[in-house]
Image (tube, rainbow, N blue to C red; front, top):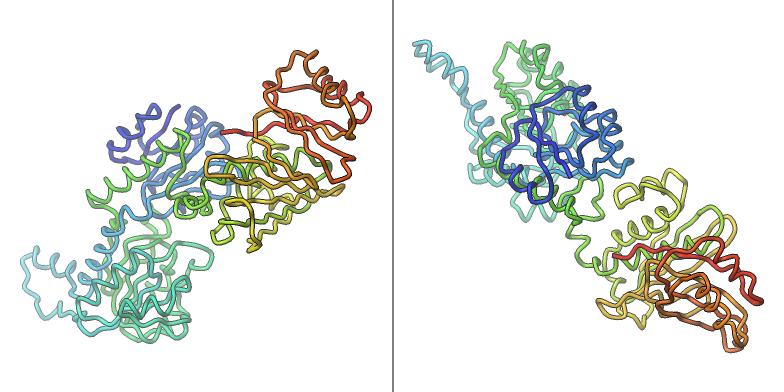
Length: 530
């Protein structure tokens, strides 16, 4: 396997990845340059300079994972990567301290006119009165986005004697108040309370131009703004106009709409007090090392057959969600595989029910496993990343429930698969932690060990059926590993044989078995067994 590392990432990343793959360090390249070579690589690791476009992703026919050594992934086309089944990972915690400290540094530099005062002093001037600043003490800091970075900024601000108010629809009033801040439910009630405002949110359609001429007009006159998050959250032209008019007292900006080409940035024309830095939020030796190591470890793990700890496009498989149900992932996938391979017609609805110990857990990872099992049995290139996307594109309805009904198993996953022709029900369970079994096939209660190659033979329950089927299989040179025969009801009218075999079978074998009087529609089943 080969991994391409670009954008001047710390070489410690290469030493980690080398345990799983060959590593090539190359300089930042254009889209066309990357397209020419990316097909040779199984993984790509970048920082913010490289734009991983749909064209690059399409050319990366062997790509399994793209790693961003940093927090944001807006330079990577997530939709294209997800549709291709490529995992995208980042390092959400590696530069937390660096970004938070830079925010505080910019806020202090802005409040005390550090940059212009330093320039003036170096010129031999002594203009103390010209650079009179303001104190942070007892001022109100408004924080938009109360994740790891935003909350650490708030913690430092409280220690400086500031009052902190928070807007974040993804946190709660209780969390903010316990922290020592004030929670504001909507932005209309937020803007006018702040002396300083700092943003710590990703760049999305909802946050693009969040701060603009209309929202600035709702702020206090003399407000000071900080952006160490993403360019585009603050409208640069509107901010320039507000600073030049004196409505915004000052601003400190580390990120821009068009990086690194900022020669046309409107903020360069500001006549008032503004501090501009070239995206230094994560630029500490410690942060660069941390994010490089974090992402490199994830790339090594994925290429070695493991899972990523910070996959951006498969949140359902984050370690905190996966760990409680990981023992059920394989049997959930096998249950989906078996259900669809026993079915005829186009899949319309998938109903997933979990009971036993699973009733109290988040089963989202198991839903993905079932989807992968169903879709990969009929389509190529399906994995945990793109299975939900493919299901949605195909208009498949997915219903997931957790049942409190008592189960005789440690945990059980039941899949009810509805096609345009029929309904098939299959249940998989763990007898104990290490013993998976298929425990139900339609009306049959079973206990079948999932194996890679199986024959499913419905038949009328009458003498010599097992012998006749076994004879055909033997004459075809196929070895039988084990066999389960299950009766449908007390009348013993119908039964199924589930035969574990050592190799695949073709239509010739199925046709020969079909000719046995009393056999109904035998099928070859191919399961993924870890």
